[in-house]
Length: 95
Image 1 (cartoon, helix red, strand yellow):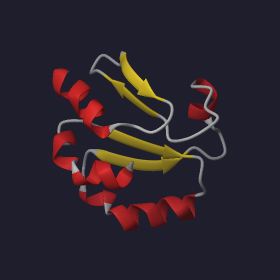
Image 2 (tube, helix red, strand yellow):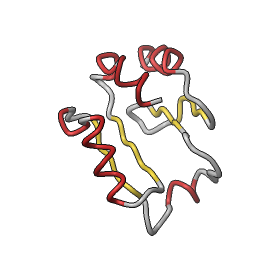
Image 3 (cartoon, helix red, strand yellow):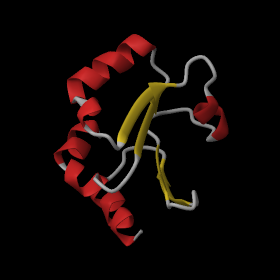
Image 4 (spheres, one colour):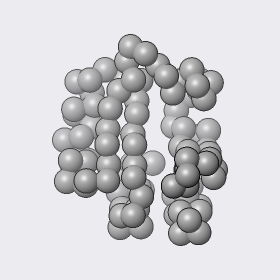
């Protein structure tokens, strides 16, 4: 997902992207370095350890999980398996 998303990152310039993982902080730091996420002001990366809010709230058993919300925080679409980036961009453009 990340490799495809970052190839199309310009399509997400008006979106706020929040990336949350169940992984420990040291792996988050490695991810940020690998994908250079800090150069994108609209991307925030973090871990939910030890609270696991997203895992509990969305009843997640597997990742990736992707959710698209509008500016009013209404859920537009979610993907519980692989995220088709073209489909995500299509929905994003409608907003």
